[in-house]
Image 1 (cartoon, rainbow, N blue to C red):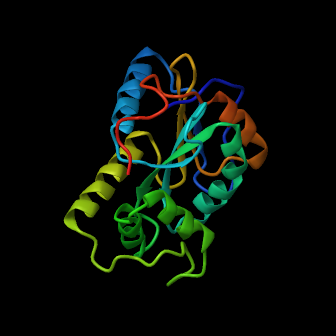
Image 2 (cartoon, rainbow, N blue to C red):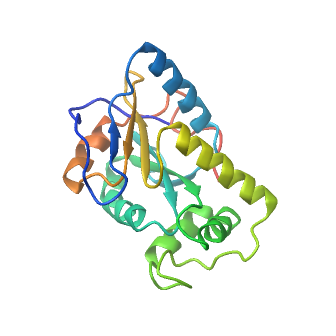
Length: 204
C-alpha cells in the first residue's frame, strides 16, 4: 500500500516510538523499500474508511496499544476525504494482545470487530481494547502475528503504531510512533493509492 511526498523532515518526539524516516534514502534503500512494500501488499490487512480510496495508509497496530487507539480516532475524520487505512495487527503490547488479534482475525467481519475493539476501549477484560480475547489462539493466527511482526521490524519499527505510505511517484515513507494531530492532514494528502489499484489482493 502507498503514500506521497511532503515537508516532514523531522523526528516526532510524541508519546510513542519516535522514529520518522521520510523518505527512505538512496537508490539501494529505495529498492529495498519497494520490495518491502510489495510484501506489505500481500499481507492480510483489515480495511477501514473509504471503500473507494484516494489515499491509503498502512498501519501496524496492536489491539492494546493506546497510541494506536488515539491514531484510530484521529484518522476517522479523513475517511470522508477518501482515506482507507489498512490495519496490520501484531501482538506485542501485553499478554492479551495475541488473543485479541485472533478474535479480530476470526470474526465474521474483521473490520467491524476492530471497530468494536476501539469503540469499547478500556471496557473489556483489561485496560486496552474492548474485544474479548481468544484464550488459545490457533497456530495459524500465531504464524500470522509472527509474520506481521517480522514485517513491522523490516520497516524499522520497534513497536506500534507504525505508518507506511507511498506517494504518487512511488516513494515510500515510514512514520514510527504517533504523529502530531496537526500533521495528519499533510500525511493523508501525501498518501496515494497502490499501483495495483484501490483494492489490494489480500484482506481479512
